[in-house]
Picture (cartoon, rainbow, N blue to C red):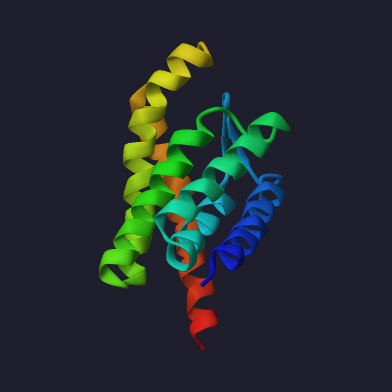
Length: 154
């Protein structure tokens, strides 16, 4: 895929993530957005780690600026998209890419989001709240992405 094609596909995925943010699950100051995880897996597989990370950053930025997301969107989505893209690039396995998104966002992203929640949001959010909520959100969205990929493969 050319750079222009990657930019176009990435832009479409960013739009899907932003529009999909209207279907969020509020949890205190956190807004869980399973659609972002669908986009992360699709971007990681179709665009690779760099463009997937840029798409995740762009979607997070738009979501935060429009009030559809919190600053916690940045570490979770970007880490998950990057790990998903790297794993797919190295293994060509959609299942492993899916697991990369789930672990990248659901665990690593939640841990990285913890100090952001404390510093920038002024919230006393316990890590034991962030990990399960991030994990559930990413597990839901990433699982839907596997269903979408199965349809695409047919």
